[in-house]
Image 1 (cartoon, rainbow, N blue to C red):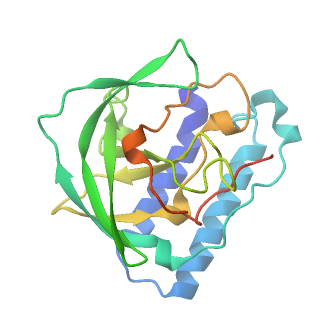
Image 2: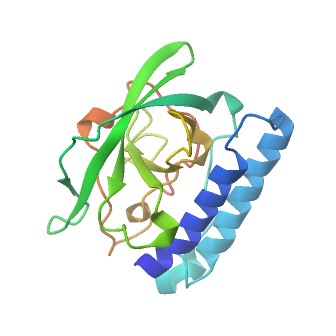
Length: 207
């Protein structure tokens, strides 16, 4: 499973580097989001990296909300260094994954304040690619309607300095469980439900 996940992780981390500040104009930003989605499409067509595994030939293009710079916001991290590790249930009833809370993300979106908990996956500490990786999983009012009912994910990076981090919902993606069986995907905890529709990022693959 890890071998298949790495290409998408590399794409996500490359995107984090590209969008670590607020320099690009809206048009340049939208072009970059579309370019990233084309790279995801290419990865999904490759049996070596596709969540469809040996059935990658059956994959059809993903559906997305249009790129919207309004869903790219600055968040403040309130760290939780004393948090205890815990297990998150996955889509596989017999499998849990160990995480620890890294902190609370406070941000404003469309004029209202929200908070989400961001985590570190304790199963990945020895992989250099994930050294500074943060994992955000959430549901919102679009979940089960326009987007996958099991929630969506975002890959983030611990900021080198300070407590500010770019939270870009245009980059949120589905867990691999949205595309087929055989995966163990962490289920977003209830505390990470946003009481609004996040009309950004990937939609559900099929009804």
